[in-house]
Image (cartoon, rainbow, N blue to C red; front, side):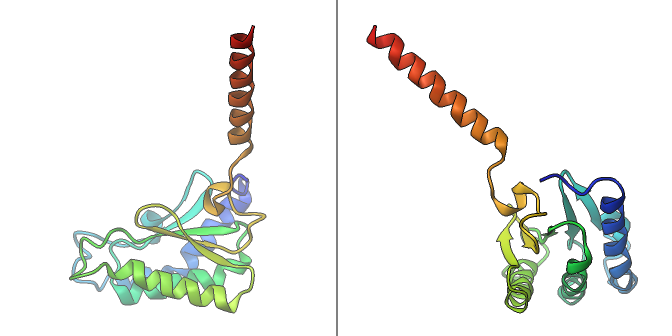
Length: 167
């Protein structure tokens, strides 16, 4: 499924940015803000078919606030999935902090909301799926129609090649 068209896409992004405004304000107090500022305009966007919230440049406490704010807002969004970028933890002391924390928050949200699920979204990313019918196929792991057309063409060519050898 594609991203919500036009107005819904913009509305969702604006809702998320508004919900995260207090996090952005608090982020200005982080000691690394001058080098790596966290702002909703730069850390929230649409990427192809899904809404993305990048938690890079947030400390663990503010990142948790951001995830909780988006989880609270999620039922009101037109999209059925939100991707959180946690990164690989290069700025963490020891193990990556954000990935573990986001997984815990999303697991709790999924327990509180039957039908929701959390899934890996690639390296350093986690996806909250709130409505699989509205979520993009890439978020849910479903194979799109293009894949199945390709499979049908492959098998058609394989059968044609086999029949050609039999004659």
